[in-house]
Length: 336
Image (cartoon, rainbow, N blue to C red; front, side, top):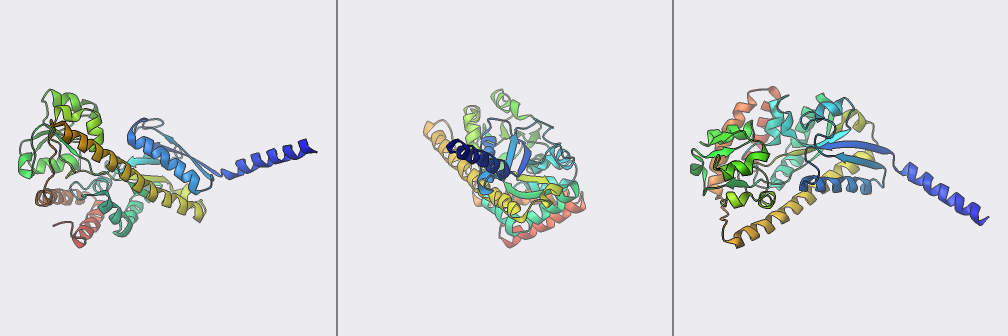
């Protein structure tokens, strides 16, 4: 009898475990395995499992695992992937609106400003207007934070950008820096350190301060600008819309809440890492950290908004993003 009871309990446990996991999804990240962002994103999958009581299991794959970084949107629509965690600007070739909402260069001075726009300024609604026609549902936004700026020469304001040979990703970022007087060039991230070391370039739009520091960028470019004044990518967490529509409301709510909590956690973790790296850099005596004044940041933003307007003219969706974004920034006093 004892063995029978034990067997029944064991069988019941297995049945409970089997029924607990009701949904299994496969997402692909735009970050490589081992990258700080990817490691944090793996924690998001654990948060989802916890918030849903184990009902949802997400397998997170690093960049290029199934498809290229700029092909995940099509893969999700086709059902090859269930979702992605990715920089929205990768899809600006389909519609310039994706590039404008993903990284309106110069718009944000802190992640919280972007989150407020997404939550209260119409940003999330815009994302679904853009994504739904492609078969995706926007769940929420995160970001690694405001990127620092790598420089081998002192930069204290917009005037110092004149003629600056710098690396910048193609698209709006290059466009804005060119309008500000710099001479941007297209280089893969893998060539930034060598190009700075050999003085092929003087500066680079790269990533957050702590990652720059860990990779030795400040050894060859000892004049970083922090906090950055330019770039802060919107990283979307989205999934197949038909799959989303088939989920019960409580699972949808849990997924949305998990993204909000994850974004707060990611920003806090990377901000803490940045502050520690800044303190270490300043203590070395070999690195000078430059923090632009509010006036200089406003000058750069004014230049950037002129380029946003040019992007807005390229599609109806881009114009909608521009109108919503600039109205929000003006009302929030962030265009001053």
